[in-house]
Image (cartoon, rainbow over all chains, first blue to last red; front, top):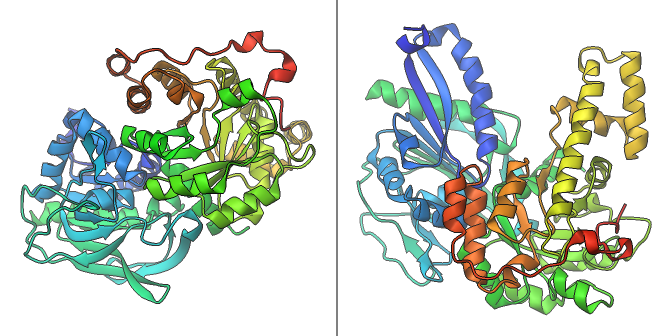
Length: 250
Length: 306
């Protein structure tokens, strides 16, 4: 048995269907090189993994759903058979989950301002977060922006947040489940998330206060892209708080 | 331009990675593209194969047509301007398109200058057939690069040539200047750096940035021009492209909806021959096409731009 085998493996998956998965993997790899050489982690071995097929979900401690085009990702997930096992795993509460931008859209229970019918196929969300997400809330690409934000609970301060055709959390859902309409989609519920939805950050835009980061128990959602800045503090917080602390609590 | 402005422009291109961008000429075609899983559409009046056939001056498309496509789909919408046509670009920015393609497929407007792209808030994609051209466009502010394969031919060979050309020139630069990372005053290294900078007609720092990044361009690089089948698209991905543009290939085939879906699948599964095979059954007739080797030099679009 090698030294590595005697350690507890912490594997964080990155959904690699389309979009900025290479960027997330690069961030995790830099972070994990540091974590693996830190003396306090002598009993742990961290690794990042691309997730494309149902078998890639085995043994994960955390999962990141990346930025990209949510319509494209939803269609590819449904076609490849990954959709349902992924939705069940996200909702199970067994692993830490983080959705960025398009990833946030996919892990919401309700998505509004979206296309529902795509020919003979449909846009579907995976669910997990009890929120309603509005797509392209800030407008088109010309309205994309960057802004420094601080996240008190995380200790991540003055972080450069890149918003690209970004969605926002337009409301937090109550016990009443919404139903789908012509321009909104509701995810199938496999398992209830009993934790409250906490708002982590908001931005002021055009006189409105918009929610851009939330957590609900094991799930984190951000409408911006921490994978686009050369700064892995947000990834480290996700691993510390949603992957490690949760597995210790459990 | 400050780094954060560039980041949000280059960032949209990063969100399109491992995706397919499709040329569309109507709302109906745009919906077919979106339903197939395209990550973006390129709105234009005539696909390149028709421009090639019909001739005449090819300009920016009718803004009404572009706007109707923008309101019909939820994915990003791109549109083309003539090389160097700053006013067409300003109009598209005012219209609110998500990306501008300064494209050799249209007739050249300025034979000396490309658009100064860093002055814009909207990101630009530009064609490049070699590393020098790619670096010059990036210095001008392009947030995304694509190959200049022969649009409208259905012959992928020119795009493949450009991908390989950029790759081999990049390897050459890294191999010859790597020494400067450890020893920034190394004289033979500095002489070679100067040589590359003169050859590519960009400042030395743009060349060094490539070396510092291990040979990776600072922006996303897509394949474009002549891609007509799922296998063509997968081949470009296999050679290291971040995604593909498909122009005439889809809507000049006999079953566009099916072919569009198959190309999206092939780009997703480009490493898995069984999946590409599965997607490639019963696609109908691909576009007939024209061999690039049969074109006269003046008929080639890739020679436009510099």
